[in-house]
Image 1 (tube, rainbow, N blue to C red):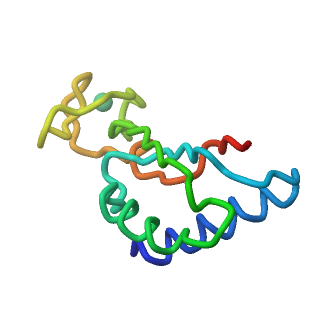
Image 2 (cartoon, rainbow, N blue to C red):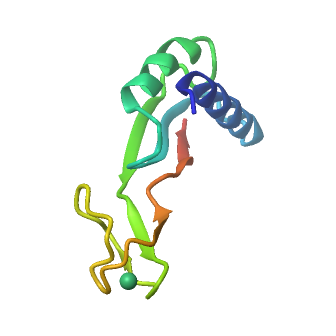
Length: 113
Ligand SMILES: [Zn+2]
C-alpha cells in the first residue's frame, strides 16, 4: 500500500463523515495501524500535512494506535503474540501459523468541533 493513496482515501472518508454530521472542523483522527501493515506513520503524516490543506481536516491531529502482530496456529488453534523472528507456535511448536492481527489499517474514529 502506498501512503499517498492511503491518505487520499482517508481524507475522502473523514471529509464525508464531517459533512454528514455538519462538523466545520476535524480536530483529531484516530488511526489503527497493525505492526506488520506497510503503513509508516511518518509517511502518512508527511502526505497528510500537505494534502489536508484547505480541507475540513486541515488542522486535525493524527493519532496512531499500534496493533501488535498476532498469530494463530493452524494445528492447535493457539493464538499468540510472537517474539521477534519466532513464529513457531509456543503450544505445539508447529510452524504452520496464520496472521490474525497486526496487518490492519483503518480509521477508528474522528473528533470534531
Ligand atoms: Zn500449535
